[in-house]
Length: 186
View: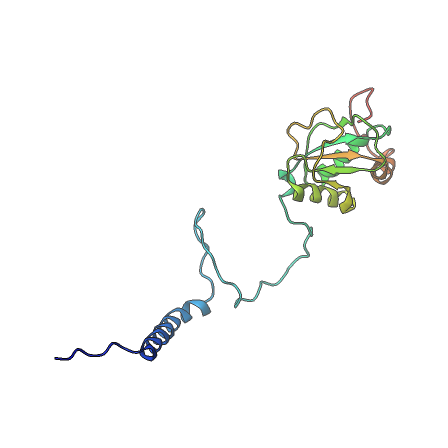
């Protein structure tokens, strides 16, 4: 007796193609169906939204930076100028924009320009603070030690320079009480 010959390469290719077609037919309905309800908290789900149109925008975006929410950023503001209450005024500006701030302090040195230090290692947080204060991206310092005695508890340290004093402190001098301890220039 003679055993049948094994299938040739053409027959194997045909079987692979037929299997791919069957798999495609089975998966096609799930790829064209709109997304279902949200998964429960903690579930890991990947959804392909390339075929779904984005929802209409109802309000303009309030920020062009991505990163943590302002309330999650702990900012230490230090006065690097001789202007009275410079750090307290800038801290109030940041609180008004939703940031969490620590007690304002004086920097250990005077500076010629404001700087925003990413002391917690979160560069996006430092960039968000700089943007909120309308400081240029070049004011963000990714590494290095800020000129303050301590930054414990801070994600970001802002050193107030003459640019912020001219923009915020001078204009607020007669309109608000910036606070701060007596005898200090916070």
